[in-house]
Amino acid sequence: MHADPVEYKTSTIMPLAPISMPGYAATAIVTHRNGKRETFCILGYFASENAACTFAIEYAKAHIDGRPRPRPPFPFDKSAPAVCAVVSNTGYPVQAPETARMQKKPQIAAA
Image (tube, rainbow, N blue to C red; front, top):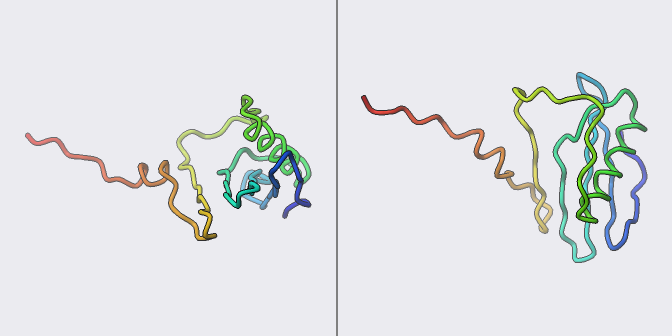
């Protein structure tokens, strides 16, 4: 389900690869030296747990460095809603802005 944490620069990367319908879902939690945590949404789906964790680590390293993020080998279904939780410094999940925007009800125009 997850690989060992990876120390990179001043951060710790915890790759995660839960099994999902299309394969193993790559994601990661990055903990910075100051205690701030960043949690990535599903980054892509892979045929093996090892491949998913390797991709999550490389994605997190690019994020930390400010480089362009790698793309997953298989395209995402854009119609599927993104599910993401952001963990605050307190350790409690907070709703990501993208998820909050998706849950807003559409406005009906007045006739």
